[in-house]
Length: 198
Image (cartoon, rainbow, N blue to C red; front, top):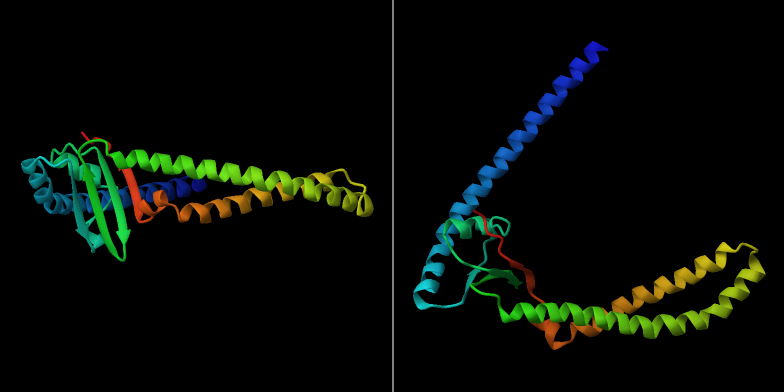
């Protein structure tokens, strides 16, 4: 028994060392990306400060020099007071917009999310309620004819209910996709508040 513990303990130690070295490599790679991003963003942020702008955009096509997760570290190294960032992708080109203050666009994004949920709820109510009453008599007739189980009608009614919810979600998505609010955010990948990294 001692030997098994000794062998597994040795394996456990090796696994911990491998995990530690992997984390160390990831930290080194992140630090390299942060230094590259500091070099790339410094001209944009200094011109933003000089001209008194509240937002600026950086366009790039090569994502190897950029990491969205390392962005707060790069901004804190530059001493920047950026509050929000927005990353968009259109036809292979990435656009990073940096906002100094809370942008008006974020309110429209929250409104779009709320409207999408409201649209789904209204369509779901319009679809599920009639669908349930249309299929209710058919489900009862089917369950009394073919089975004496009380679970079959419950299962079939829940399937109809979930079918109505899923199809109403798909329909709401199709309708919402053609709205003006959705077209404004169709290329947006990330829109986040910058966490200060001290």
